[in-house]
Length: 227
Image (cartoon, rainbow, N blue to C red; front, side):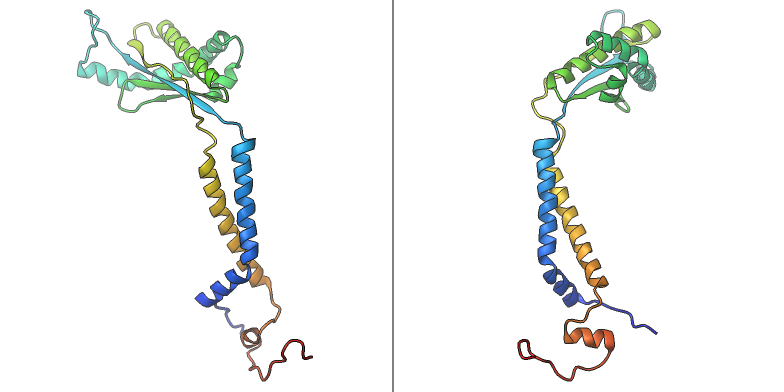
């Protein structure tokens, strides 16, 4: 019956100490690769967004805040989100942008998010050019408002709450986060690889290896250089 190989804390420490150069090398390579990609290769992505409120105006021009109306528009917000992301709206927005983006590209770059429990719809666009992100959101929101009045004329009044601001900082890539993740991934992979190499190494190098693998006592040791 084969004896089960066990490792104590001292064995773990010895393995890590033995493979410290390999571990350090792999960690440095992963961290540097992530840093180079994040800072010099991956182009930054900018984000702009606008919020739109959907409600009902009373005859005096003020918002009608009746509970039933509020609940109705909260339930309808998903319908308006579907209108905002429809092919018709994206096609019209593409024309408004003079074909800078195709309708399919706009669908990928623009997200429509209804804010749960509210009458607010958020339209967010991402682009590698900050000015394009703003133009994209403006085009989609204006085409959405126009199309909503056509297909849902009995619906609520649609107003823009917050217009998109020019983004001064990119949202992607998150450089320091990427570097930190690469550091920890490199550390975990290198430590795991070190233990795998140690497990696969069946050669006998020390008297402890003789005791563990052969189960016989060591009678003597020949010092190096005296063979």
